Structure formats: C-alpha cells, structure tokens
Image (cartoon, rainbow, N blue to C red):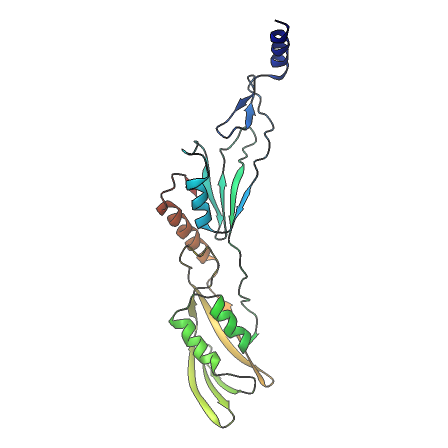
Amino acid sequence: MIKEAIDKIIDMATGHIIKDDFGRQVWDKSGSFLNEPKWPTLKLLSLTALEDYLKTVHPQPVPEGVFLHIASPTQVTFRGPVQEPKKTADVYVEVHCEGKAFPFGQWLATESFIILLQTMFVADDTTADLLKIVGNLSSDTQVKTLDNGVAQEVTAKTGITIVGNVKLPNPVTLRPYRTFREVEQPESLYVFRMQKEGNFVTCALFDVGGNLWEQTAIASIKEWLRETGIDVPVIG
C-alpha cells in the first residue's frame, strides 16, 4: 500500500514517459516533449554498407517517419522521424564517400598528371588518348605548339626523334571519381592544356562544366537506393 502510494506520487511528479519504436523517451502524459538522448550516429563509407545495415541490422519493419536524405554526391544520411516542436531528426547512419579530388586548374608535371589521370578518372577512350599524348613527353622534351584557342597542335621532339603531331580538342569529356563507386560517375567537360616551363612540360585540366554533375550524381544515388528494394523514403 505504501509502495503504491509512493509510485503514484512519483508518477504525478514526473509524468508517464512514453517511448517510441526505438526505445527512446519521447514525451510524457502531459504532452511535453522530452529532451531525448541523442541517437549515436553510425559512420559508414559505402552505399553497400548502408544497404547491409538496413536489411540486416535495423529493426524491421522500418518505423513510420524515417527517411534517407541525399545531402550531397558524397553524403547520405538515414534519419529518424521529424520531432516536434524543434523540427529535428536524429541521424542514425551517416554515409560519407571519401577520396581526394583532382587538382583542376593547376599545372602538373607530366608524371604526376599521368598518375592522377589513371587513379582518379574512369578509364575510357578519352583517358587513353590523353595518356598517349602525355606519355610521349619527358623532362627533356621540346614542345612547339600552334594554338587557335580551340585546339593545340603539338610537335613533341625528344633528341632527334620526332614523336609526332597531335591535335588536342577542347573541351574533353571525362568522368572523375567524385561520388560513391556503386553508381556511375557523372561526366563533365574539361579544357586540357599543355605548356612549357623552361625545359619542362606541364599539363592541366580546367573545369568548364560547372556543378551540373552534382544533380546527375544525386539522381543516380537515388535510383540506386530504390533498386535495392529498401522500403524507406528517399529525399534528394
């Protein structure tokens, strides 16, 4: 009898706490929103890892109100329901695509340019053509150019051996790695240029495509998430 009275007094003082589908304290019987404990965010590095989490680890069926948010071409978050009155949503999972960006707009030594072209771009006919051109140059290569503003005609001569004349059309279409590897890398236009700096030859790529690729990448991520069969709304 005494214990029941004490429990009733405590209940009257603190209110009856209600929990959501994830076991968090949400609100009391008076309708007051509680300062719920922050949900620990799980950090992942690929869309495949996110798919595995949603299909094998996360409670099923997925509670109403949760959603996937494509924040950018390199970040996707899995969020809980929007909570009143603060209009906030816990971030359960954050997926971030890591990787270095190609130094567009910077003049690079031929060796550095070749390495970055092979490791930071999707290999295709255009990258193969660029590698053929740049691969024929060395630190002691003499380069003469005829430039009409649209294309460079380059004569590369090493010692007494003429490598040949090559026209470099501009712009070139390339697909740098800049979003999740599970989706197709969007293509952009770049101006490829070469110049002499003393006895050395340097190369550069200048971005002329703007940020249109970001919309393409987000659309590709959204389509990939839908094709996984995950029954979660996707916003992006």
